[in-house]
Length: 172
Image (cartoon, rainbow, N blue to C red; front, side):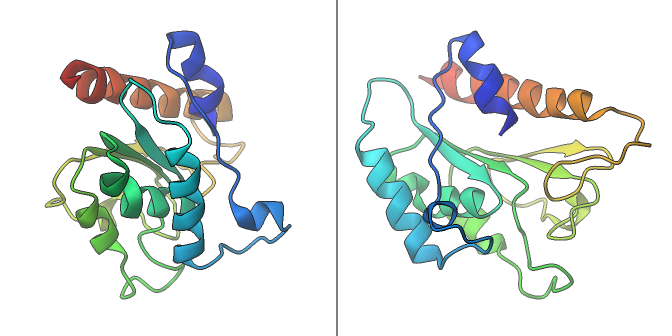
């Protein structure tokens, strides 16, 4: 996750939570309740005086959106939010975004098969979309892309930092 490597230099603490499926060596996300229980347990051990933002990439973004309010978070960072399973836009997960009820920047690849930026509804309160040109669900860009992979990840970091300063630190 690009922000984890860059944000500490800006004075922002980042803690990574390894999802239970990774620990077990699985490639497919475990059921939502399992992800949520792990996130809640990890977040409850981190109570600090600074604003809490939860989130992650893909299934981690979904779990963050579902759990943020209950954890007292100030926002949800959603990288590559899986709006729907690949090829199944009718199985939308937009209710998870709506249910967050908090500021939620979504950083989405332009070619993400689990939700292209134009598929996201414009009426979700607090949603702030950043599009990574030509990127896929893993935020990877093809070698022939106009922007390099490093430049694309720079957009992820800059948009995250801008949001944190504007919407989280500024409202503390």
